[in-house]
Amino acid sequence: MMEHKHTFTNRSSRSRYTRRRFLATLSKGAVLAGLGVFGAGSEVAVPGLFGGGLIPNAWGEIAPNLLPKPDMIVHSQNPFNGEFPPHLLDADVTPTIRHFVRNNSSIPKRAKFGDLHGWKLTIDGEVHRKLTLSMDDLMRFPNVTAHAVVECAGNGRSLFTPRVDGTQWIRGAVGCSKWTGVRLRDVLKAAGLKNTAVYTGNYGEDLPVDSGEAFSRGIPIEKAMDEHTLIAFKMNGEDLPAAHGFPARLIVPGWIGSAMQKWLNRILIRDRVHDSKKMSGYSYRIPAHPPVPGITSPENEMEIATSALIKSLITRPKSNAATDSDRLEISAGSPVQVGGHAWSGENKVDKVQISTDYGIKWQETRLIKPSNRYAWYHWETETAFEKRGYYEIWARAFDNKGNAQPFRQPWNPGGYLGNVIHRVPILIDS
Image 1 (cartoon, rainbow, N blue to C red):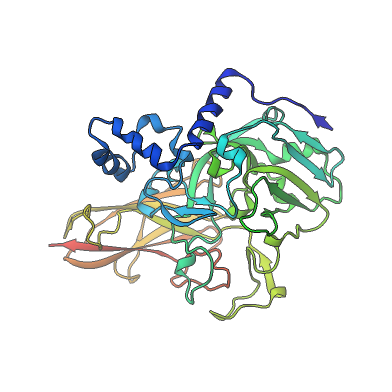
Image 2 (cartoon, helix red, strand yellow):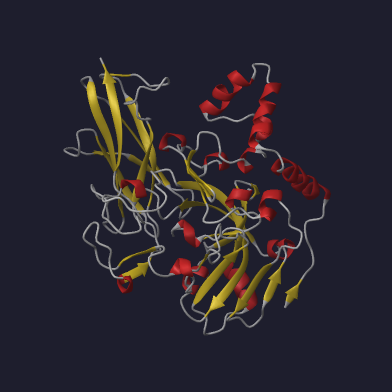
């Protein structure tokens, strides 16, 4: 058994976590009051910086730990859940300040204060050697950096008809950031899997907001041993922010976000499918057969949701159909740049098409390959509208297995794996 006692003790690490501890004690209002240091005054800085998707340069380390993040659509405070409108997700690599937050529980105190003291990751169960790893132990394994899509299983739930219960995510509970960590398979090889190993049971330090069972999910051993599955400790080159799983989390590329346990402190190797509450019943499970909309399938006909489906997102242009103060005016005949992202779980994106006449005619887009497997693809094209009036830009993605986004959202009782085509309303001025 590895029982190393090492933790981060160098000066730079101590100062970093001390600053985070200090900031965690500040109220959001107290931090915002600091905007008064700007010569322009906070009344100018707030809309000028945050309204434009920017943050003060000195806040680079602070902002990812503040909730809600600027311009975030907040669905709940405890547990905290929030997303961003699609036009703020245009970046090739999603900045931490623009990454959605999905929590099933309260953020652990350790994460809020950035405190590694006493943290260990335990690997036990169906293994030959129980491991108890400090962060130093973990980082001794070969480090890997990759871009990966992380998406809440319920992203798009608000688009289901009939309505389903749960957080009413729109389209922005998705991001593609840069993750650094170690391969889970390297750690499991060090523990030595027994022939009886079937599934992982993953646990974190977060506590439920009620008296129920702590949030825990798992993945099959085959996926755990995939070279792309990581135990991550950095996001976009920085230590994981509190809301994103400090000090360690799983990244299970291509699969739903709930498989990517945050605040990770234990991986139990099991001889059966993990049977926690969040793996059972209707939780993160979908019908084995298409149900009649509004009719819940019997529990014994539900299957564990795993891989994401083919999907696209229009990030530009922003809809200008509303009378916002920053409404973009588009004139008839002028070129309009259209673009966004596409992803497809375990499959590859084959093409993305757009339509501006409600699906009668379709236009191919230029598809840009991802930086690595499991990162999202980028797509772009140009279009124009000949006359003034109301239009919609539709985007539809296809994968290499022949799957395409549906025009109407197939229904399931959990509102999971939503992938209906994206439609952006556009008003063309004279």
